[in-house]
Length: 337
Length: 233
Ligand SMILES: Nc1nc2c(ncn2[C@@H]2O[C@H](COP(=O)(O)OP(=O)(O)O)[C@@H](O)[C@H]2O)c(=O)[nH]1
Ligand SMILES: Nc1ncnc2c1ncn2[C@@H]1O[C@H](COP(=O)(O)OP(=O)(O)O)[C@@H](O)[C@H]1O
Ligand SMILES: [Mg+2]
Ligand SMILES: [Mg+2]
Ligand SMILES: [Zn+2]
Image 1 (cartoon, rainbow over the protein chains, first blue to last red):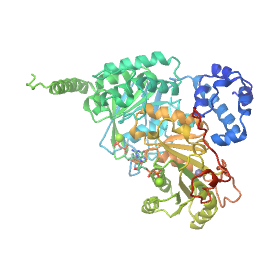
Image 2: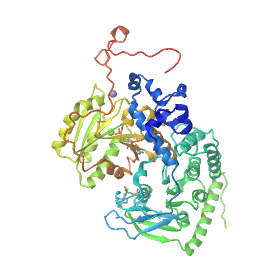
Image 3: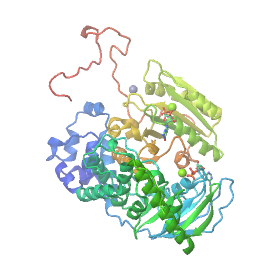
Image 4: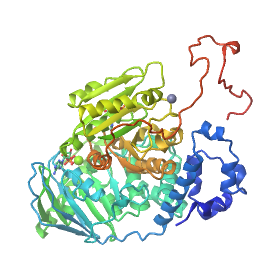
C-alpha cells in the first residue's frame, strides 16, 4: 500500500513517471501542474492560497486522500491476475411468482457459448445483469453466482476498470464529440491498456472488416453509421477488454456480419452468454437457457440434429443477406435455387 | 429513520431513479417518504404521490436551493420522523454546480447521466466529489465503451464513491442500488448540529441583496471582476 507520505515528497514529474495514470487524476481534478514538474506534490498543494481552493471548490485534504485511494486502486488493478475465471455457476433463485427455478445448478466453463431465449419481458436481460452484478441473493431473482465454484469478492462491483464482465448491449450509439482515435484512446486509458497505439490500430482494422463501409481514425464517432458504430463496438469489446466474461444482449438487428462478429468475440479464454431471438445465433451456442416468467425454465444442449439445422439456417441467412445487397444496389430479384 | 440526500444536475434522472428505487425498497417491507427541493417549479411531487409515498415539496424561489435546503433540513427530518417512515429521501436539483446539500454522516447520492458530456465530471464540484454513491443513468442511450469512459472520468474525481449504473426507465440497477442505500443500524432522529460536507460560497454582493441597477457605483460587498486581458483564465 502506498501512503500519502510517500506521494507527498515525490516531485510531480517523478510521480507521473512512476504512476502515469496520475496524469488523468490531476487533469480531471483541474490541478494544472504544467509548471510544477520539479515541485513535490506537497509543496504544489501548499502554494495555493486557501481562497484559491475555495474558488476551485477543492479541498486539500480530500485531494490527498483521493489521490492515495486512486493510486492504490490502480496499482492493485495492474498487479492483478486477470483471466482467472475458469467457470461460473448459477444457483437457482425464483421466477416472478416466487416459484423456485427449474434447475439445480448451471456451470459454464471457459470457451463455452450459452444462448438465452424467451419472450420479451421474460427476464433475459435480468439474467445477464445478475451475472454482471455477481448476484448473491440480492437481486429480484434471488439467484447466486459463483466464480470458480466460490462466492466471489463483491468489492469489485463498483470498479470502473476491473470488470469481470464486458457487455455488448442493444444500444451502440455515440454521443461524445470525439474522433474515433480520440475515443479509443480514452477507452484504452480507462481500461489501462499498456500499448494503446497498437491496440487502437487493431480495433479499427477489425471494425472495418466487420462493417460494410470503411471509416478511418479521424471520423467523428457521432458521424458513424449504425453498422459502423456496432462494428466498432464489437471490435472494441473483443480487442480492448480483458474481461473473461462477455455478455451480449440482442445484437441481431445490427446490420453487421453476426457470425464474424461472434467469432471475433469468442475465444478459448472467454465465457460468452448471449440473449437472442435469432435462431442461428441461438443454435451456435453449446447450450441454451429458456427463460419463462423471470425464471430459468429449461437448459437444452444443442444436439447434432440441431447443428445440421443450423447449417440450413445459415444458408438462409446468406440468401437473405444477398437479396438485401442486391435490392440495395437497385437490382431486381430472381428466384435462387 | 434512514436519511438519504440525493442531488444531481437537472434532468439527470433523479426522480426516475428514486421512484424505481422506492419500488425495490418497498418490496422489502420498508416505508419511504420524499422531500423535493427545487428552485422555481417542480411537479415531481405529483409523480411521487402517484407512486403512493408521502411527499413534501419546497421551492426556494429567490434563494439558491442548496442554501434553502440547509435552512430547512432540520424541520424536514422532524416531518419524516412524525410520519414514521423507515427511509426519508430528499431530492434536490443541483443548479449551480458549486453548492451541495450533503451532510457529514448522512448518506449522499449524486445522480448524473451519460449524456451530459465527458467533461461534466470536471465541472461538477462537491456535489459529485463528496458523494458516497454515484448513480449514472441513461446508459441505454450510449455504447458500453462510452459508459466505461464516462464512469472512469467520474471515478478519477471521486475514487472513494461507489459508482453504479441505473436505468431510470426500466429500473435496471435500482434493486442493486436499494441494497446500498438502506442500513438497519442507521437511525437519524435529528440533524441538529450536523455539518455540511463542503461549505457553500459565502459571497454576498449587492445583487444578492436586491440591487437591480448595473454600474460600478451600485456594487458593494463581495464584488469580483473578470480579467478582461488577452488571456482567458
Ligand atoms: N433513456 C433514458 N432516459 C432516462 C433515464 N433516466 C431518466 N430518463 C429520462 O430523463 C428525463 C429526466 O428524468 P427525471 O427523473 O425527471 O430527472 P430529474 O430532473 O433529475 O429528476 C425523463 O424524461 C426521464 O424519463 C435513463 O436511464 N434512460
Ligand atoms: N425472477 C424475477 N423476479 C422478479 N422480477 C423479474 C424476474 N426476472 C425478471 N424480472 C423483471 O422483469 C422485467 C423484464 O425483464 P427483462 O430481463 O428486461 O426481460 P427481457 O430482456 O427478456 O425482455 C425486468 O424489470 C426484470 O427486473
Ligand atoms: Mg432484454
Ligand atoms: Mg426530479
Ligand atoms: Zn448555490
